[in-house]
Image 1 (cartoon, rainbow, N blue to C red):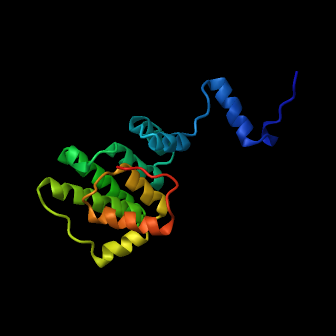
Image 2: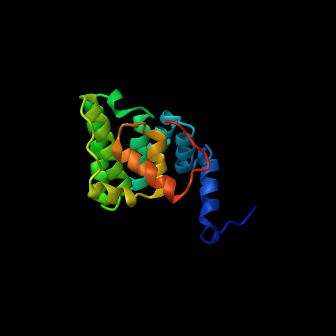
Length: 176
């Protein structure tokens, strides 16, 4: 019979043993969510992001990506007021918890621009504060916004697009 010394074993070996005993493969929900978002499989992304947030409720990136996935690649005016209000409230809570989460602020502005067009309004030109805010957005998060939030009439989105084209050219181009 083998002699086991659990105290000296690595945590990943113990985790693997637990997985074998309890069944089911280990799933990297964060990576699976990113792959699902990339494939525009929003329902799958939502499921994986919820699993990430079950383990790490304060994960800002997962909270942000959950809002992106919940929009399902559609213009915000395709949703009811309650749905958009709920998504916007999630962004506000995220910014409250992480004041430097500039991409969440920019996403909220773009959603607002999209809703203004619903009532035949026109988004205002970006203010100096909006231009500064867009300049602070992490390029990876900014590209996620451009890839998954089709609001071409948003001046904030246009500003973000122009900024990201200057920062680093995209390796692949997608039309929204």
